[in-house]
Image (cartoon, rainbow, N blue to C red):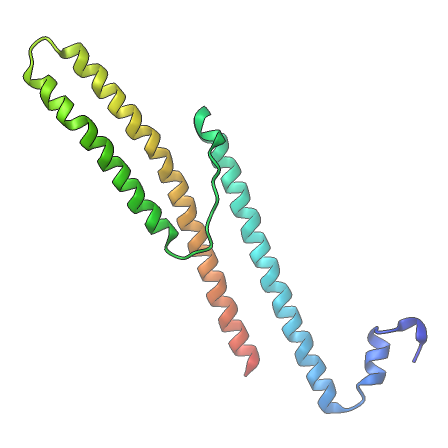
Length: 160
């Protein structure tokens, strides 16, 4: 073989004269191609997620831009985040509801009641920004799960 083609195609052809070894090499090439495709798809998913996080941060109110958004590869993270969000909203409601009831019973408290409701709404709206993060986490989990399931099926098909 040509020494300038060290470990190249010509060298491999010379090395693998045996048909069984040639089939093994072909199978190795198919696996390599499959894994390269899987790796590329996972990289594309990560790039998509990074772009989505960047867009989300650009749309958030000023105070939120300092909040890091890190998407998790753990399945079920979006459900956990949703539960935490619901608990936070409940805590805000529990905080303001008794105050609102007290003010409603008193006369001439319209201005105080309006101010209280404004604060309450503001806190709930701040929490609502979490919904966008939860939706993104959910989409990321779904896409990642779909990719991994498809990759497993492709690997199973190739191994047969």
